[in-house]
Image 1 (cartoon, rainbow, N blue to C red):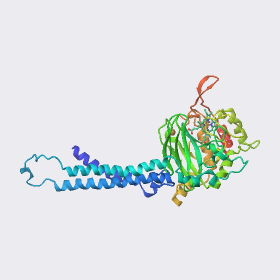
Image 2 (cartoon, helix red, strand yellow):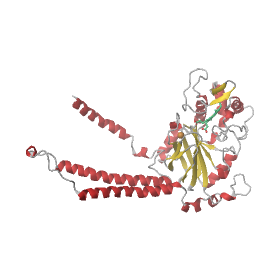
Image 3 (cartoon, helix red, strand yellow):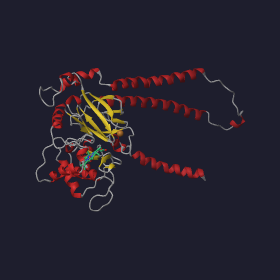
Image 4 (cartoon, rainbow, N blue to C red):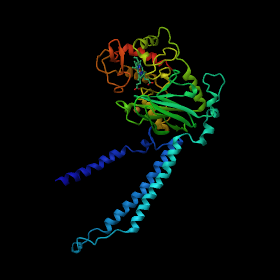
Length: 427
Ligand SMILES: [Cu+2]
């Protein structure tokens, strides 16, 4: 009875497998976060090591599987076997085969070890041969007296980016270019880099262990509290790339994403200038002006910096240029029109192509994010669902008049609307 059950289950397994494998279409192999579609030298080297291993394993599988099939056929039971003695003569093995197998195993290990070790050395730090073309003086002219200038002492260095992991978002700083958290010019969630240049990445964490991973460009190295790690990256195609924290780091780990925007070097220089600009003043009498007042009244200022408007907050992401970013809240919410974006990716077959930000989607995301404190808000009074469980904006414990309390805020629909209108002016 059981065997019949299993044979039926076996029959069922085939269509199930077919459905599962249906997910592996060619189109889906070039998805946004695919290590099989390298777009830079580090990812390429990592892909090559992977393929070396795959081919070796294919050969081993063929050899071992072939032997097995051969043995099964050659030594299958035949009529008359029952007359033969049940116990065959004991043997002591074949020394030639044993030595051969040991040598082949060592050979396979060495075959994998050589590319693996050389890849580990290659990916550790910017290789000397990449420095001449990538050092700052080679592509980012030093303009005496300009605000976006860098110090003469670093012109022989490649661009460095400090990546700081926080529960649950990434902060990027460019110390050589003056874009740092201390200078109130840090860049959250979207790393911007110039195309074709090797960049040194310094990794650290302000809380628990995280991991930096942009599958098409490079990965993964951990961000550790109390320890500095480093790696290097280079992207050889412009576009919008998708990254992810790759080390479990708590409740919202799965929502801790980030993006990488790869620009032509001239565009990158312009972007640096824009990052240093203050937010524009709000128009008098506008909804944005009401939103700005709410931003101060609702304690947003305690955690967020808005250059030129408010300057105290450093705990949460810098919002000075929020409205210029394609994603929100650790890149979990996308500020583009999802239908248009998907259509573009289908049309060009390239997930790095990106449509522009869609203001309506952006606004809806802002309202969803700010209002999602898990407490009642708005006219219907229903509990809202958390966009990111346990996130440090809605569940951060801080002192207020009543003692150590979680900062749960309630908002009316109108207040959310005004806050969103204000934030959308922060280009
Ligand atoms: Cu993380």
